[in-house]
Length: 440
Image (cartoon, rainbow, N blue to C red; front, side):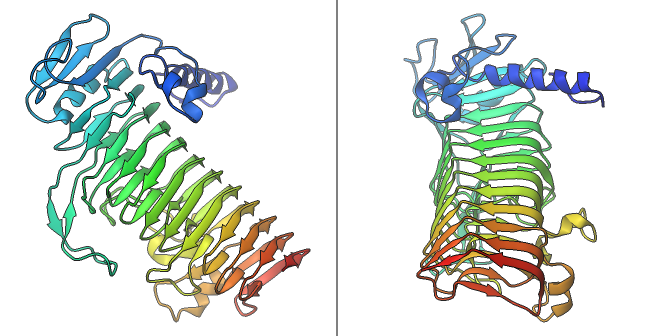
């Protein structure tokens, strides 16, 4: 695969052309284009340019009719059995993925239940695709205490492992059901790190994971059409498990999070932390414990056309939790961005969203590590933001709250049946322009 190592227009055109070729290959080899919904369904019916394909199925032999306790890898080029194991499914998938480490290609998971004992690594230029009901199931690796359990959780909680790790440029995973099997800590369904060109589409995560879909240190990321059900801490996020690890809170850019459904989360449903140039659009987010969509911090992005509903606060930060939030939070600022403009949230557009049944509809704030640090609320406040054309209903605290911020616009919003329509803290804000907001 070509990489953007030059500065000229020709280099950029080559990279864009290569990426289109790669995305065009997400289709017929796995049957994804014909059987799934959302973005992948519109992709051309074509295999990767080099045609390399491996097929992983349950059972022995070419027909998969033998020992159902075995996993078999078929070579799509030669039509023969390339590998068989009586161990765990990750052994078979890693064998297939490693065959593509130099060339790229496609690995297809048959419609079966695959029991994993550890993670698999997807290399550059490779697409991992599931066919109709392919289910990857994690294993329990032990137990430890969750530092912030809910009233419904009893420590210790079961720990698990990542299922898929994306580690290369131009990588994709589509059409898989990821099953944590009750594990709650130290794991993700998909974790992408250090990639340029990531496509995660039309997957489903169920039965746990500390963080469902995680992206760190990546560029040119698309997360589209996924359903995330009841993860422990985060749904779609730029954090990484375990929290505080080497990958956690590392910076990404050019991130699109589009048309996903995320529900049943302790903290944030969608959390583009430490991200520059992003779009969060057309998502359905509900049943969270902290703000449903949270930028903490993020820069130069848009949160547009999302439906946010039903937030029940869990250990809220000062100012409450919201349907949509932009903030500076000191504990989310790592050494990479501390003391730089990237430590603050700025140039963010929040427009055309529908927020219902949250304590706060839209929130801008600063959360210093020391709650009494009033200087930080003035010096590290979000700035240059626009909150326009949103509809906020049934907020128990405030429809729109600017607890700290500067150079912001709050205009043309519709505010219905909220305890307080608009709450701007004059002591910690500056140059907040308001106008044409309709209150009902």
